[in-house]
Length: 484
Image 1 (tube, helix red, strand yellow):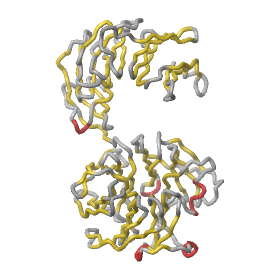
Image 2 (cartoon, one colour):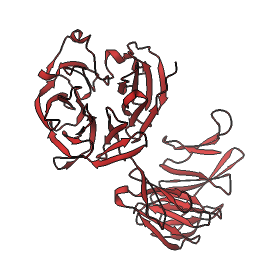
Image 3 (cartoon, rainbow, N blue to C red):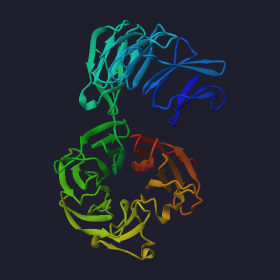
Image 4 (cartoon, rainbow, N blue to C red):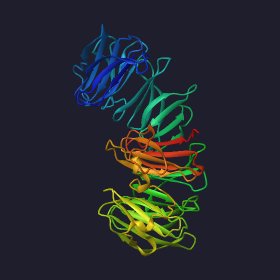
C-alpha cells in the first residue's frame, strides 16, 4: 500500500493499493491536519499502522476495515515542539521522532506516549533519522552534524561535520557497505562514512535556475540562477567542469541570464541588479564588468558574427554593445527603446543586422541593431533569416500557444532540423514541427518540471535538449528521438 498527503488546506491523506490496475486504486481519503504535514510512513512491523508528523503534531493512525482511527501523540510534561521534523521505525517497532528543538523521542509501539527522550541531540532541528540493520541509529540536523547512536540512544562517538559550503545534511541513506549517501540543503549529494571523509558526488543549484546557454561546438552548457552560482556542465558525463559564484563590480549577485560567444571562448552573465560580466569560458578570468541600469538583466545575446552584444533589461530597453579586441573590449553603442515592459527574449538575424524581441506583455518588436532604431514595418523583414528562434511570441511559433491559456515561457528551434520546442508555466515541454504558424498545430507533450520551464536549448548536433526549472531548481537532459 501507499500513503500520500496532498497540499490542500486540510492536507488530505489518501491510502492506495498502488499495484491494482494501471493507475492504482484509492482505498480511502481522510483529513490529516490543518497544519503542514512533513512526513507520512507505514510501519514495517505493524502493516496497518501509519505515522504522520509536521507542525504541532505527531499522529498515529490505524487502518482497519476500510477505516482510519486517529490518535494524537501526547507529549505529557515534555515541551511540545513547534515541528516534528523526522520519523523512523526502530527494529522493535517503536517510533523514533526528531523535532525542531533538536530532541529525539521514542514512542511506544502501538501507543501514543513517549517511552524515552534525548534532549538537545542536535543544535536546532533534526532533519533525518536512519535506522541501521544492526539497530544503530544515524541522525542529521540543521547544525550540519551527523551522529551515530546505539539502540539505546547513547552516542557511539562516531560523527561527521558537513562542510558549510555543501549545506546542512537534509537526508541520509545507506550506500554500499558502510558508506552513507547524504543529500544537503544546498542540493548536493555527498558520499562517505564515519571513517572516510564525505566527497561531493553531485552539486546542483539550490535556488531558481533561469540562465541556460549551450556551447556552440562542444557538448557543454552553462547554467546559473538565483543562488548566485554559475556552473559549466559536461553533458556527456553529467558532471561539472567548473562552478563559480557570480561576482560583478565587487557585488555577489543572483543571476537571471547568460550566453556563450559564437566561438565559445567567452560567457556573459547578467544579474538581477543590472550588473553583467564577461568571463573566459575556461579560466573564468573576468574580461568585462559593467552595469546597464539598476533593473534586472533579463536576456543577453551575442550577434552571430560576434561583433555585438545585446543586453535586454526589465526596464524595457535593449542596450547594444560593440565587441572589440578579441572579445576583450565592449563599447556601448546605444539603446533600443520601445517596449513598455521587461525584455525577456532576443533573436539576432543571421547577418547580425537585425533583432527581434519579446517583452513580458507579449509584444514583438524589430530593430536595426547597429543604429538602435525600431523597424515599425515588420513586413520589411519577412525574408530575413534568423540565427535563433527563442522568441515565443512570433509568427514562427504561434502554434506553441495552445487554446488553454497556458503561457509559453521559453522556446528554441533545432539548428539542423525542423523542430521547435516550447516550455510553459506548468512545467510542460512541447515539441512541434517548425514553422508552427497555426494555433491548432499538433505536437508531442511531456510533463517535465514541477514549476515554470524557464529555459530550453538544444546542444550541438540537436541530439539532446536541456531544460531548466524555476522553483524545482532542476536541470534536465532529453534525448531527441525522431521517428520517420
